[in-house]
Length: 101
Image 1 (cartoon, rainbow, N blue to C red):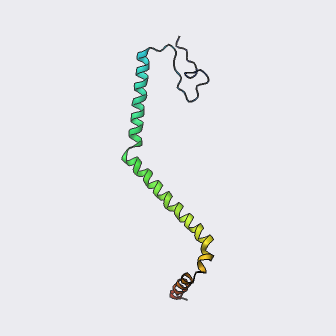
Image 2 (image 1 turned 30 degrees about the vertical axis):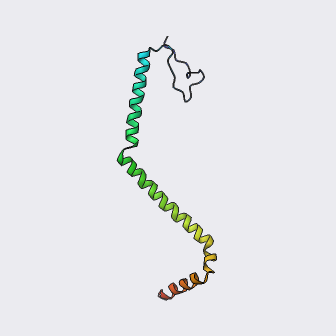
Image 3 (image 1 turned 30 degrees about the horizontal axis):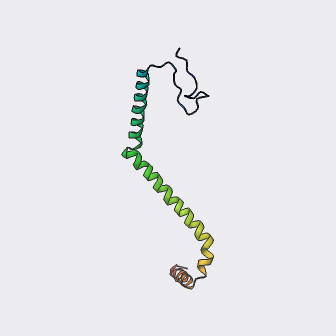
């Protein structure tokens, strides 16, 4: 009595929740209600304004840094090709002329 076995279909449990064989229906209902309350609290925490704000800030910083890295790599690879375009070369030389010697 009250012995626990593996998951619902036997076996080692794993992801499945272990179910007690001789539980009364009221016990099952109470367990389900407890799990639903836990899930509701977890969802409320996950969807809270402050958590979403923090995640948005972290994702925004990551997007900015990642974009800068990709742009730097792309310009490093494609830079010599861009330098051969006449209007890019003239703009570059104009910019250099403004710099102090």
